[in-house]
Amino acid sequence: MNNTNIQSLIQSLEWRYATKVFNPAKIISADIWAALEKALVLTPTSYGLQPYQFILVQDPAKRAALLPHSWGQKQVVECSHYIVFTARTEMTPADVAKLISHTVQVRGIPAGSLDFYRDMMLGDIVNGPRGKAAHEWAARQCYIALGNLMTCAAVLSVDACPMEGINPAEYDNLLGLNGSGYKTVVALALGYRAEGDKYARLKKVRYSHAELVRTV
Ligand SMILES: Cc1cc2nc3c(=O)[nH]c(=O)nc-3n(C[C@H](O)[C@H](O)[C@H](O)COP(=O)(O)O)c2cc1C
Image (cartoon, rainbow, N blue to C red; front, side, top):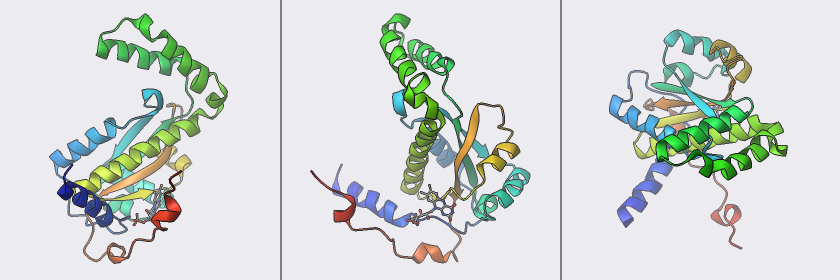
């Protein structure tokens, strides 16, 4: 990586902010959106289990219905693209079997060669102590996807607002998730900032490098 790339990465991260007011007339182009969806799909997860689904909510009526369950935050209806991150409610042997058979197919390897890996996953996130909190674990994978998407969006000069200020249970109702095996975790509004959004001009509030990064 040369210096220009290093500088442009930092510039993108300084440029991004949690956008409060989107310009509803500015829509993310199809090619940029395709790249952002690709970035979502390429997100790494623990064991590679991908225990999530990303729901792109583009129906204006659905967005309007979500608004009162989003602390009234207008980003939900004004942004170009609205993504709801949902995580598996539990992890089952079927989740593990699905990954194993997909890996066998993609890599063209004998199924038996993954027995050890399969048993490791089953003994941990399905039947092990962590299995009891598998939804929390799956939700953490959602946050990796969220961070990944926010950074990729910034690099492509797309604005975004992460949204934890939502009512996940109401989202589940409105998105028909009950009984689906997935629950709402967090959301991300994406698009382009409105000129008048005063938050764009605020200085970043971050603790010092020395406080946040320790070398031992
Ligand atoms: C997981 C998460 C949830 C957030 N939820 C909201 C939200 O519901 N509404 C909002 O306006 N900002 C929300 N924010 C934005 C943060 O307040 C903001 O990222 C933080 O203050 C740092 O500011 P900056 O992103 O502008 O640099 C959220 C941020 C994160 C990472």
